[in-house]
Image (tube, helix red, strand yellow):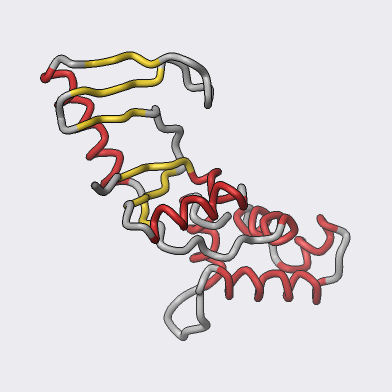
Amino acid sequence: MRMRTVVHSSVLDDDVKAARLRELHAAGDLHRVIDEQVQQLLVFDHAVAFLRITPVAYSPGALVIRQQSLITALIDLFELTWSRAREVTEPTPRLTPREREVLALMAEGRSNGAIAGALSITEAAVGKHVASLFAKLELPATQDDNRRVLAVLAHLRGTAR
């Protein structure tokens, strides 16, 4: 039996949880990541569903649902969430806290010089951080694309973490 799971992107920030997710994925389970909070839901054989009563992880209690029309609606909601979530095969290399600061300032439209002033570092250091985040976001230099804009778009979509 294969399970499909949608997890919040913050799971990838925890090394232990991310490693467990990779283990389950390697064993055949399917996983996707979304930047919105998700409600924990388990559905078995389209016959019974368990919906967590509170959003707090590891809190006791779940609502047991056996009404077929409600289960169908919950499955439809899961399918919609699944379609909006992004694939997880291997988590992308994580940006360092400094790279995230640089990227956030890039998103404000600041130049390398302005970023250097805001962070009290040299412009050369900013250039190194920018080059590193371009590499981690897999944004190669091309004639046709503006990597700063593509990096900011990844930041706004929540895919640059």
